[in-house]
Structure formats: structure tokens, C-alpha cells
Image 1 (cartoon, rainbow, N blue to C red):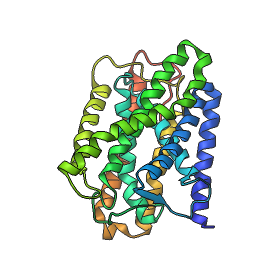
Image 2: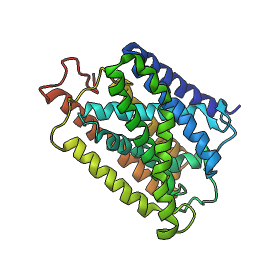
Image 3: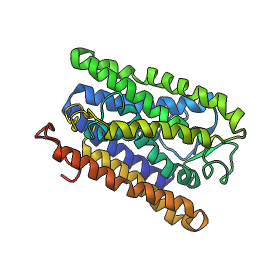
Image 4: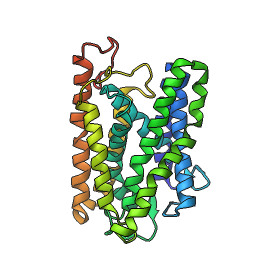
Amino acid sequence: MNPWYLLLELAVAISFVLAAHAALRRGRLPFFELLSAAIFGILLEEGDQLMFESYHYASDWIVAIDRAPVAIGLTWALILAGAMRITDALGVRRRYAPFVDSVLAISLDLAFDAIAIRMGLWTWRGIGPEQAWFGVPAGNFYAWLFVALGFSLVTRWLRDVAGQRPARAWLQLLAPVPAYFILIAGLVPFIILQPLLEPGHGEGLGIFAVTLLAFAGLAAYGVWGPNRAIPNGERLAIVDLRLAFASRLSIHAVFLTALLVMGLQSSVPMLLVVSLLLLVAEIPLAWLVNARLRTDATASPAAETVGA
């Protein structure tokens, strides 16, 4: 048994249990949302490995469901739940919220995926460390956008359903299925265009960049555009706002530490630059969230702040 994997899986499990306990105290729906996010994480990891066979996880993972480490599914839950909590705290209206959620999620993967493969946590098949994004295929990043988009779209719609009929909150447990279909549908344009425009295994960074710009544009309009919603969302939050940021900072810290320990700052300095830039980007994000909660006259008196 690899002690590093044991420590990592225990840390993730404890974080998820704490988040689940806090969600359950808020009500059934937040708890179901967090649980369904974990189920979705395991489903997409298992499904992607079976259908596309583009990567595989290390054999050192201790607790797994077939090919999908449970800790990865739980991490997906914390990432998705945290992104949605931050988006709600920014007062983004529902039509734009899934795009903000997607941008928040991909900002983490851009920071850690290339480090994770060098740690041996997972391996991308048929692609060298110098190809695509430092060994990570462009399709992975493209898919992350639609993973978050699909789950957010379905979950936010079901919030409205449960708000009108609380007895239907259990429907959230079925959300992983339509969310996964949205992911697959979102992948179709990339699958068609990549061989035509950017042939080569793992290529497609241009397609991803254009898609990311579109998502970022819609997200920016949702964050800074007119007619924003109440910047709180605490009542419907899956996780506490402070836990949302703590989860993101913990992920940054783990992989940035690994980067330094492995000496990647010398061999692949751009990974250090990207990791630090995306870590530092959390500061203005937290500042903006606090500013929205403190200055909007319509915010709830009980609104949280990141530093509280």
C-alpha cells in the first residue's frame, strides 16, 4: 500500500464528509446535490475510460469502483459544488451561471493536470510529456468545460423543481445521467473538428481556446453584466463558501507542492508560472465575492464572507 495514496484518499474523504455534513444541515436538496456530484464524478471517470480509453489511473489507488478511484469522484464533487457556491455568491443569474461554473472548474485543471501525470496519479495514453498541453490532450480541457456545464445546468433546473415541490428533491440523485449526456453531446463538435483542423493525437488546443473564450465571455457578462441576482445563495448552497475556497486552495497547494518537490520548476518552468498565476487569481476572485456580499443592498443579512 502506497502511503502517499492512503494520505491523499483519506484527506479527500474527510473533506467530503465534512462538506456532506454541512450540506445535510442545510437540507435534503444540498445534500443530494453534493452526493449526486460525487456519483457524477465516478460515472464520468468510469464511462470515459470505457468508451474513449484515452487514459488510465495508477494501480496504487486503494478504493476504486472498477476503473474509477472513489477519491477522484469525491474531488469532482468538491470542485463542482465549490464552483457553484462561488458563482451564486457573485450573484450570477441562472442562464449564465453554468458558464461561470465551467470557467471556475477549468481554472483548476489547467493548474494541476500536467503536474498530476508527472506524479503518476493517472496516465494519458499515446501522448508524450511534450505534446499538447505539457502531456495533457486538449480534449481533456474541452471536456472539463462541458462536465461542469452539464451538471450545473441540470442541478440548477432541478433546484427550481424542488423549490416548487420539495418532495421531488430526490430527483437530483438522477442528475448524473442527463448531465453525462450533455457532456457527450458537447464533445461531438470537438470529435468532428479536431481531426479536420488540428490533426494529431492530443491536439486541438486551438478549438479548446476558442471554446474557452466563448465560455469566458458569457461568464464575464454574467458576473459583470446588468440585472444580477442576489449575491448570496447561502440557503441553497451545496457547500459553505469558506469550504468552497478552502477546497480550491487545497488543490492548488497539493499540486504546487508536488511540482516543487519533483523539481519541475527547473525542467518545466512554464508549469510553475501557470500554477502560480491561477493560484494568485483566487485572490481577486475572493475579493470580488466579498465585495458583492458586503455592498449589495439586497444581500441577505446572514450572508457569509470568505474571511469570516
